[in-house]
Length: 338
Ligand SMILES: C[S@@+](CC[C@H](N)C(=O)[O-])C[C@H]1O[C@@H](n2cnc3c(N)ncnc32)[C@H](O)[C@@H]1O
Image (cartoon, rainbow, N blue to C red; front, side, top):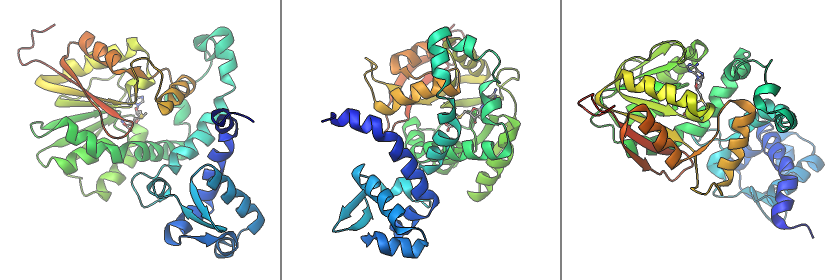
């Protein structure tokens, strides 16, 4: 008998693809509206082949995504928000990204093991040139980031307590998952998303959707070559995990220089446990960062260390109930702290 953990690891690929196919063919959308239906009834409603659908439903049930009782299928209660397109936690955009963008690059790992990442990737485009290779890829990536980041951002904004802040600079803020949540929670706040030019139209669409046009601005730029706009709060959400320590130190120092005295920086990231024994998603995404970017995931202590190196003081860690957490650093009012 294969041990249960190994079994899930071996067959996990089927679960990922079953999730995507069920989503694409409207199975989850149907099950959010009709609970406890037979494969035959679902197949008829969706006009798909019943035999194929039933096999798919059985896989999703075996993995606990669906509850199956007496040949009828329903969404498991805790799964529902993540497969419901109308819910901000909808995760299937991220599943698309894993299959369409990440999986095709797994082959690189052999090269990394043999001669290292730098040598293997020597002729590859920079991470975001590849991720943003065409308009569809930009849209898919930003949709995935919104799905991963927006819901937890409400909690992160509250944990950050931005009631005293006036001008947020959301560095690499994408289509605004954090900015939108922060602006909704703190009416006195304004935000500028600083990101690559391709991102502009996607931020504008989210801003209009949430009625934030007068408080949410976009500055197109490259954080390696352009200065950051000035502000009293700098957000780095899933940015530092894209880059090596040296680059993180440079970016944080840049934020420090642009930060008004008394201001702060917010790092929002997955965190490894102190012994790096988990969590599972952080370990997996740490490998994914290696394939897709030049970064890695870190422990809270490693982020606190990066903050100190950049000159920020009073480093504190605030954990959310999700898998994106907050590390805060402050720029002292005197400006003479470094
Ligand atoms: C992993 S996403 C994080 C998005 C968002 N902050 C979040 O928490 O979900 C990384 C972001 O960094 C931006 N980015 C990458 N390289 C950049 C650069 N050189 N200058 C400015 N932004 C950059 C990308 O466009 C993308 O929006």
